Structures are given as C-alpha cells and as structure tokens.
Length: 278
Image 1 (cartoon, rainbow, N blue to C red):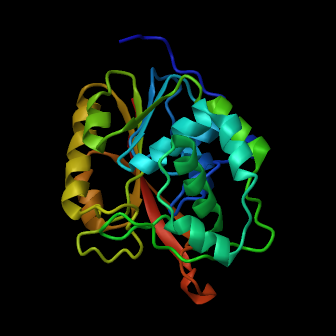
Image 2: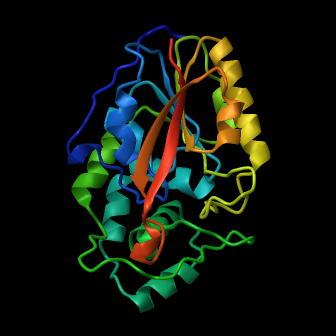
C-alpha cells in the first residue's frame, strides 16, 4: 500500500456543501470532527457515504467512498463521470406534485436517466428523505420548499471535481473497513439503530440497519484500530452503543432534529463521536 500522506483541503465555503440532501447528514458536525482528525493519514475511507458531508468538506485524496445503496453510488459515479449530460437532463424538468408523481413512478434504464430521477426526487421529496419500501420502491411524498433549486450547476460542478480520482464502491461496510491499513482514516456514520430499535427514522434502504449490524460495525472498527488505522464513528448517544466501544474516546454533541413534520418534534438530539486516533 502506498504510504503517500493524504491531502485534505478543508472547505468551509459553499463549495464544501454536499449536492444531495440526506437524512442524518453530518454537515453540522464537520467543524467538531476537524478537531479530532489525525494530523496525517494515508487514505480516507467512508463506508456509509450518504450525502458525503465530511468528504466534501475535506475534499480528501486518496479516498475510498462506499455505501450499500447501489442507486446512491450510481448517482455519485454519474456526477463524477457524466456531469454535463446529468445537468442538461435535470435542467429540463419542472417542479410540481404532478411531475413528481410521474417521475417517481418511472423505472429508467439508461444510467444517466436513473441518476437524474434520483437527483430530482432527492431535491423535491419531503425533507429530502430517501426511503424505499420492502420492494425497493421509493415511497416518499412530494414536499419541497418554495424556491427549491432543482439544478444547481455550480454545486454539481464542484462536487464532480471533488470526486475525480476517488474510488466509489457498492459494498457492505465490513468489506470497506476491512481494506483499511496502517495510517488510513475511517469515518463511519451508520444509521442510528439502538438495541430496542426506537431511534425513529432509519429506513435508508430496503434492509434495516439492525442492532446486530451495530455490533458487527464495532468489531470491524476495533480490528481496524489494531491494524493501525485511525477510526472515527458518529452514532446515537445510547449507553449500550458506547459499551461496544469501551476502549474508544467519546465526545458528546447536540443537534436539532429536522426529520419531524411538526416543529414540536424538532427538539435537540444528543449524539456522540467515538474515536481512536493515533
């Protein structure tokens, strides 16, 4: 494995914004994570890519970015490799409930139209939520805010540049983390499933992230630390979860929940960062 140190360009401007809306995204947490980043590392590995908020803030190279959601990774690849076609097609679409229902019902076959459909639904669905039923069908209702920009060309171009020469993979987190070697940096942001599965929204794909997955993730992270990797995990503030990372440092943070449809349900939520940085 190459020992070339990873290059990061921390971007606190609009250029560091992710191009996707993603439930549980960590844009708000970037400045806190910066405080615990190692000064040097070989490769950045993110096994739960989602909206990629931390990656776009750091714009790290080399980087291995992955997610179990194949449609999500497909969009990233199209934005990286076929941006002009994506922009041209996305710019032709209109925002509205009728158009939304029609596009949601489609099953496009061309790679670019698959990506454009995903981007359209992501910008115009209620709260930007990505949710599918047990058959893998997207089932979120229309609900974007007035003034929503469907095709932000500048943001997409910045994202495309940031993704050049970065690896994009569809795989389970265990496979992604298992590739980490000495000096690599892993940032894991899993869906927040607790032992009693009472953490609210967590259906990002047709397979729910279970408590057993949380246990498996903790084991993968501990093995990676033994191999010499740096590991940072953002997770729910839940005592049984912390027990899975007994030999990790813990930093507690608070955010405002944005998932609930009513303002009353958008109170402060406590989370934690579990980390081992050499």
